[in-house]
Length: 494
Image (cartoon, rainbow, N blue to C red; front, top):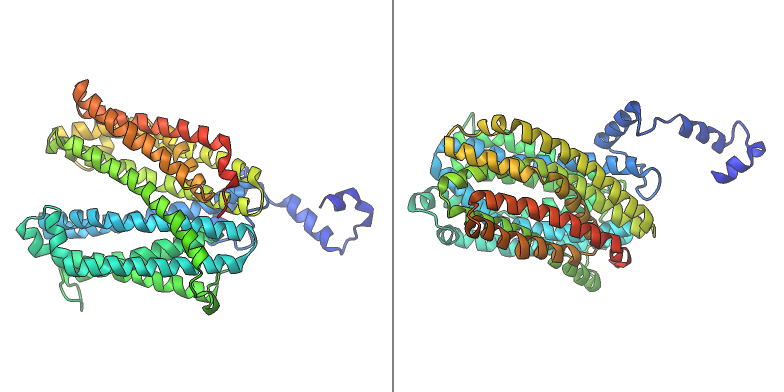
């Protein structure tokens, strides 16, 4: 374009450049209302022409972030729908879901760890404009995911009752729920592959595909859940096992759709038969990236468990209030996680295109977007806390602790907005060790000890635990900014 502007006399009315230049000048800017609306429609509809290594960074972030946010929201609906319908079957059925989800957390941890690794690899190859290498990396992830899912699935099928017993299940829960646990863990390949393949699509910039397959999975689950649980119409009454079957039919259908799209080829990624072979050096690198990322996610997951264990010392009413508060917190953090995933894709592709400055600019811009979003949510939570908590409970003690936990934790949202984006940006660059060290520092070496000391030594009780969480958010943000500005992530090879 610079040559066109330098030599206007050489342009003719029928030249391609002449027709292209005015259209670019007339295109609505993403900063205007019309431009924003047009970009949002592009984001939901899917813009296959967008090159995320070129053009306006703000628009690129928006096109990636919107479908990723909707994707994460859809994933969270699975658990909400199951609990809603299963709650009609009694407390034992609900307890089964709670215990099973605790065990499924291991599977989610592995799936997310693998997803981080494959997103980094596919995004880097995509930025290098090497679709063959991206497809080969995707194939390695498929092999790895199937193998891990098979091992975990066999354990779930044969040891479901024993696993529930280890989790402290009572006899009635074992009687009612062992079938549900057996199905959920035994069929874990559906969630494993759903996470992995969506990570591939996100890595190449096809975030809309990832969003749509989760819409499909969630829609099937919502329709089948009541039918299979209660035996509506021609369907048999399967009770709690019906919920497990509905969930896995929904996820399984989505996985079939994902595989069909991969084989047929999206605009950015196609896995053909020639790619379906084990490439040891790529597999080893994927395992290295994913192993560190899995440990990274395990650290944060374990810290939540540790905080819950500390709060359990103050009784069931405190724990109930905290559970309500943290569910509301997570409802806000899911979309924020989607925004952070957009930063990971932008970083991976920009580094692949040898444009580290573009990667850095994209991260700061995404951080600001996330900060604005969580800042607004934080303000709403602080103002309307009693109303929000009142939707879940009216019992005085749980209500009191839910309000206190929600207000205290949400006050640190602005800091966590930066921490989340920067953590995922390191992962997108293939620098999975830096956020692992940051998680160890902020959650295990700081948050858990401080929570214990504030709660018991300084006699602040549950408030001390909530305050420790907020302080950990602040520390994560500050430490992440320091490490990010050092720039070591720009030199990582994937």
